[in-house]
Length: 108
Image: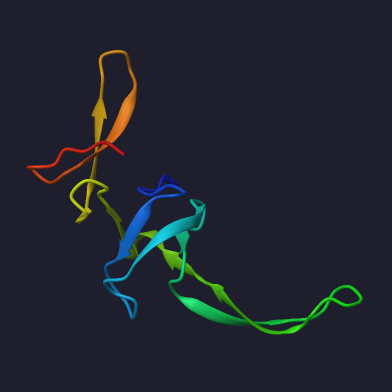
């Protein structure tokens, strides 16, 4: 099974399905093995945290939950639209991710 994802840590993405559809955020963490990503401010879940050390606060904490990577789409920094990603290979063997919109063609 291929564990490669179309998004990387630090990318700006837009959620394309689910309850958070249409919201944008920055990718905080990528888990290729599970096929999931954690996006800043999206899919907030509540965790019950137990204090571990003396003086450490416990209680209910809000944190970002994981989303399947197929539910997010990369946002182009130039045109600002969610886009599919193409790979452009140069003659010396280097690769770059490219925006698929016909008027844009911006590299990531």
